[in-house]
Length: 101
Image 1 (cartoon, rainbow, N blue to C red):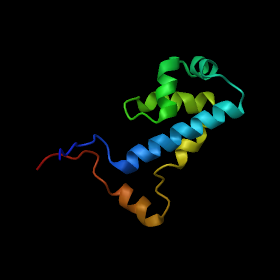
Image 2: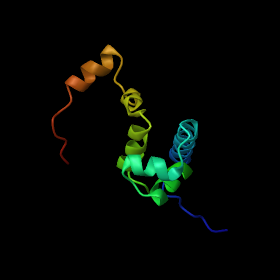
Image 3: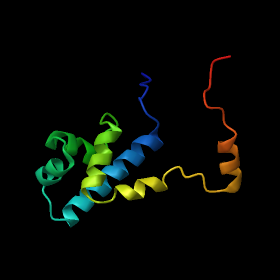
Image 4: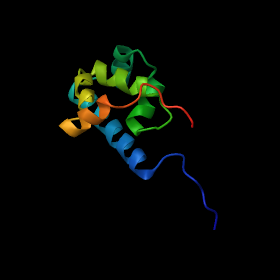
């Protein structure tokens, strides 16, 4: 039996697939064809197809462009928010640069 190492953890792939599905749903709810969203986002239709599949090989900028075109980009700010005071305090004490020791 051959062990094939996948390039991304399953959780990452699942999250991208779910994001792609949500983008497709939002596009359809807006009654846009793939071509419409691709043009509004400034990306190619083939790139949008890969986004809707949840491809990990599409740049994050292209995912964000699709979200922007769907007017949902503001929601991205909710990701990785340092909400608690302890997180904010920890972040304020981080060094500006991290160097190998």
